[in-house]
Image (cartoon, rainbow, N blue to C red; front, top):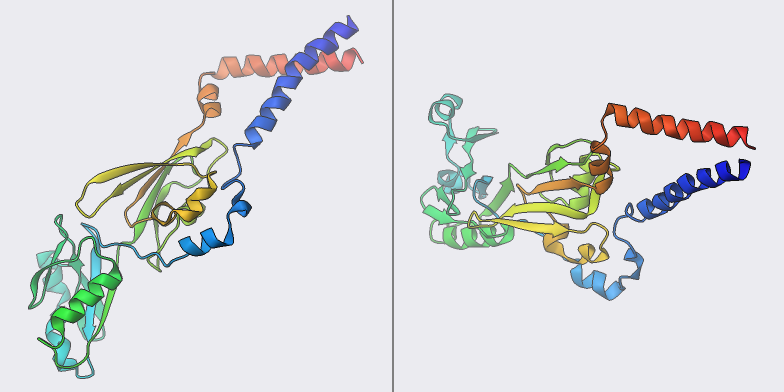
Length: 269
């Protein structure tokens, strides 16, 4: 009888131990990252620059040695006018500077130049475009142009500790930065199948499935670096799905069986 109880105990214990070993393998990120060669890293290690997308809010300020030369490209609005018209504005030392909302076609309405398509361009490309259009045709002094994203944010949902919307002050965020901001995945988060929803410059939604355990994610800049307004959804793994099938009574029953096996083990020693 003593032998039989021990055998029953082992029958329940061994699957638990084996399951623990298997579960551990699902936890690490970017497995075997150390096997990526230096050459591969150097090839991928280029500065990533976010592209301007529909619904982005931009600050564009043009400065010149003579303030009057560029003042027409930095329209000022009073706070009251901004409130009444719904115009976005950004404070500077002289008042409220208008900011620009990129429309669904990628255009902004820029002073003097009129409708200007910036959608799909990086900040560097937009700066080059604006500089070429303004100087020397409209401004006879070399201008300094500054463009900033005012809404660089990503959304993280699902099996993370702190779901929410997270912003970046330096206009750059990696997928691991976003997950770290959200408190990392919970133990139920499915690392091998994270969903990324992204809109392109045409306003079309694209869906990407990401394996956070795949070392090659470090070499794919289009996935490793997030675009503003990206949505990340972490799915629940099978463990949470299986656990959700058990109600309170079933959970108590399982706990009772576990306790009983432990008592039997102590008695038969």
